[in-house]
Length: 137
Image (cartoon, rainbow, N blue to C red; front, side):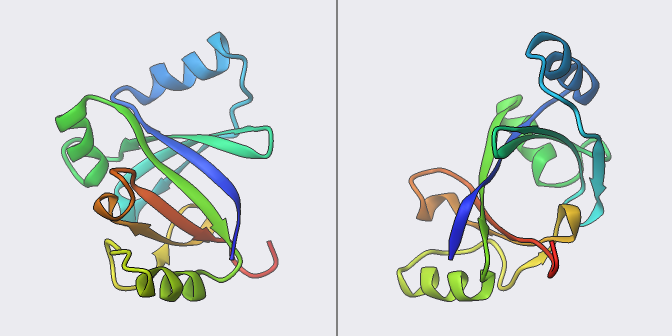
């Protein structure tokens, strides 16, 4: 079952500049970065009021889906992510309703969460991620 809005991800062409902007201009606490090799991204975390903003940037220039997004759009809102307490159950239920996913099953994302993405064509042009934290978190 979907339990909350986990994060809003923004693709940024210059990660250091974007981190500085969110810290200095907006005064949002910066909680560090994590490289997610599977997604080929470096993610910067800014927790705020029960959710967080994640800035995403390619680990290596020109590689991965975020690099393609930046080449096409130059940056901006990349996706929204909902937390779930039963990712496999939610995927099955959403598939029954006709949603199409970008992969056949969840994979491991940031913070060792199980993650899977819904194709934007299934959700009015919005890329939606479902994320389930590891047991005990």
